[in-house]
Image (cartoon, rainbow, N blue to C red; front, side):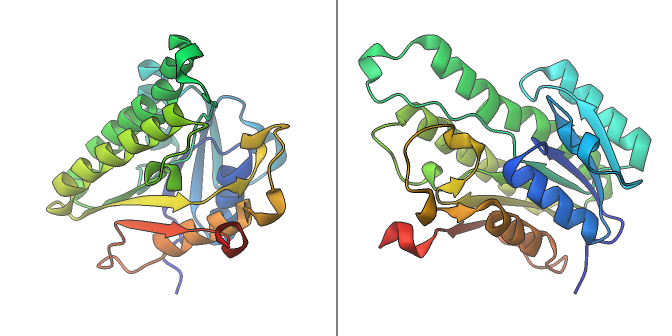
Length: 232
């Protein structure tokens, strides 16, 4: 089954990691991909008439509005939104965590999802069709003492999407949370973590494509998955 052919997918943060791997799989499946990111590295590395790039920040309202307008101009519509851009900063001692750290994560992980959801919803409502997916992570379901602010932002995005899902259902629009466990990506930087027990970005990308590729009548509200080695 291939429901990807000619679907227009707006992806945030597609320059690396999960976003990049997913964009490549979608392009391979015949989808049209609009890369909205701060660097546009994907457009520099991949040459395809089905790929367009736009440089912007998901936390800046004017950038998001302009990005969706550019996608519609390039491809005619937005069928699928994949909120993938995210920021993860540790806060192991809340008593010494500054307000800037909190605001940065909320701006990207919650405000950015809200802005993109809103613009996608505007386009999808008249069609009464579409799919909004957000890479949230299991941090939106289980807390971590080293990253309470990151978890708070992910819980917030999950709550936002849950309410949107209730609004969207009657319009024939799907909303799905993608919740991977720890994934071996640039997110971790030089932190000493057991990457051999983590999911690969390709694992997450395959799950995202699987969800997108379901028949129009199949709704997956959320999907949770981990590397078994991490849980053992």
